[in-house]
Length: 308
Image (cartoon, rainbow, N blue to C red):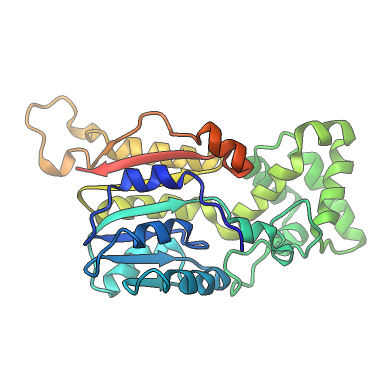
């Protein structure tokens, strides 16, 4: 199974791994990053990988078992990170990775329905135990809810036309397949706009975010991750679209500044001081070499923070 971890070298360098540390890969996927972390840990170190996707967990377990034994894999949503670690008796960690893109095997697996280029059932669930899928969004959401989803999560200017076309089509019959949806989008916006602007990319992104509640769980987990970090240790986040990056940037800015309530006073109480420092003011992007090797790295942005 081919999987390419974006900016893996930059992530490992940023983490500055200590061999006996506790590290979390909050987006385990197919263990590309986790393998590199585990290779750098000694017997006292621990890697914890988190993923909702059972297929990814099974694959990763097989891969990591060939590297070492000092790892645990948890089948949870990363929004449950803090509670899950507390249950393991862990309240501090030495580094955490969030690689927020879909893994290549997920996208390439036709039956998962993530790709707008392959015919598949409308699914897009990260967690296959979930009963809510892309089918439900497309066939059950009201026109106004579809518009809201497409506009907020896809930033597509033709959201109204696309939502209207979906509602019209589903009155005739259920929309069950990915390429059916692509065809509806194309007819709603016209071929010229479709081939120039690729609205299907944005609409599929919007539906995937809605199905997996991606932005809300990201907002919840980032403060938890900051709280869990030991002093001087780091969190790294790779985003693949502007909505995610905006949330990460805003959260990191908030926790890297003095609380507004006490700005300007000479002796700032400890609880109002910044919790983190931002290591790279501008996001790191993939190298020219990586861009040539992996087209999926084009939109990736890496942000790094360190706990104070």
